[in-house]
Image (cartoon, rainbow, N blue to C red; front, top):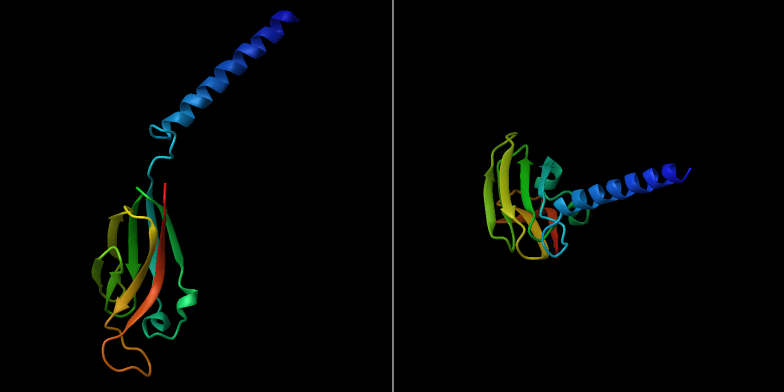
Length: 138
């Protein structure tokens, strides 16, 4: 009976040690969780493009400082997409998936806007918020 308990204890130590080594491989020095590659698909509806959808309904995309973020953007109408604060932009073609990638360097809240869209009841240049990116500190 003593040998059986000894073997169980030995196997438990080996398994715990392997679990610790495996967990450490997912972290960087200092114990922080390593950066991740994140991908978000954002399909922008026509009602959002025309300003008929409230900004409060805009989805929040989350990342952590150091993550690599890839956005795949699709819209039914042509538009210019701009991410305020990150100073990124790209042109969307109708019904074509357009990639936009960046590294999440600075924590904060960044708004994804469409520029030069036609909104009901407005004249001139307008922009519509379609999503928010929240980058949390690591």
